[in-house]
Image 1: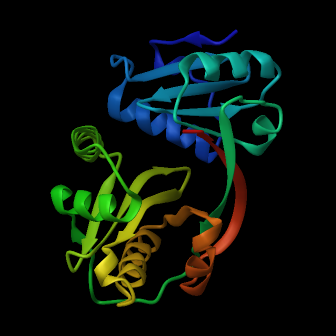
Image 2: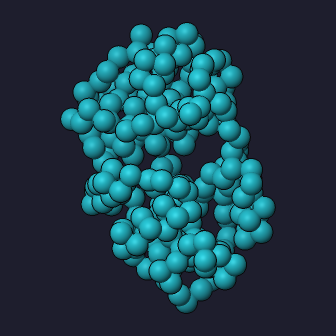
Length: 235
């Protein structure tokens, strides 16, 4: 049975990325917000976070998980491949993505700049499309204040975020460059600087990438380490 929990000690977490996402949200927000709800079931845990769902663990009752997702109707669903293969989510499409990891990075004397969140929002919006400012800004600033996330910028044109660190790996997201500044190497330089900072601290840089940008990450020294499918609600 999937049950809403108010005590983080009830979370059933493994060492996967999906558990890291759940733990990071719990660290940032606890259990006192309606938009960040934590659930547990016999062999795993789930998170409903704004318009996304994350499921970790093992799945012995796929019908129950399917009902859970459909009732909450998130925009995205993230779960391990062995859970995804048991789910049939009507109204969703699966999009392949690859987890990349970096074991080494060229040393550089430059350091990434702490991001201005308003400028970062401009870059993210220009790169990924419409993003609601109030929700994005409130979430980013809250996660940064609570030490879960860290935002970076380079030359006021490129940005990236360490979303969270879990089990010795730092998961990088929101890698973006202003459209007019692409081709100048700013994204590569920023990722080199972030990677150096993380590796020097004993943390492995990782990031998820869709198929159309896999070549870029390979070209700058990232290597495939895993893959999954993310469910996206059809418009």
